[in-house]
Length: 261
Image (cartoon, rainbow, N blue to C red):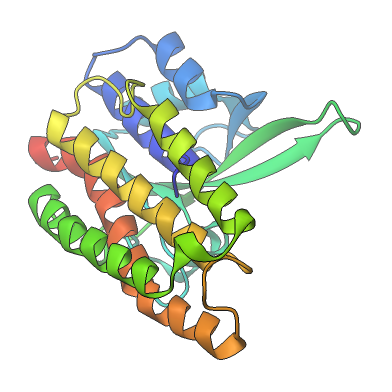
């Protein structure tokens, strides 16, 4: 979870564009990132896939006033409101964008193309109808920040109890790599223009908590080496991972909540 989901980039920079804070070119450049190209398929009024610039303009014309993020996993439909077809596609890739002002949602499909050593990534966003209803289990930014503080304490206690740092060079290298990635991310623009500092703070912390959970869940790391101990570790950290995902969604959706759209 340390890396930013594509749905997060699309929602954050799409919201900045809708608010008039960035140009279409800057928004699309930020959303595409290191990918080769993004297209949108199934957009109302467009019989074929279109580029992201045209798609964002079309969504605005269709009445879209904001973009929300959903980060669902099986058993936790975080940010979703239905119908079943949209929820199923979002659950398959564990992310989606839901539009405010129009009953539409976008689910990414990532495709790799090119020969070995020169592979590039193309993303197709499938535009589908959504149910206009409150999204599932999304906290406010303030709630998310309070929950994260407790989750970080719980994660630290679990990792200490399982002796993560004392299990040999493999675990130590993984922890060092996590710390290096966290340090490298400091000072970078975590969210798009228009987001409050509190949202940036919550998102950064949520990503770091999620990364620690992923590290702890990796096979072969930590003092818990038996199957039963690894299962216990996963159970202990599951609520922490859930809290980190909820906080990410709260951060990405905070400008939409603040505008009351």
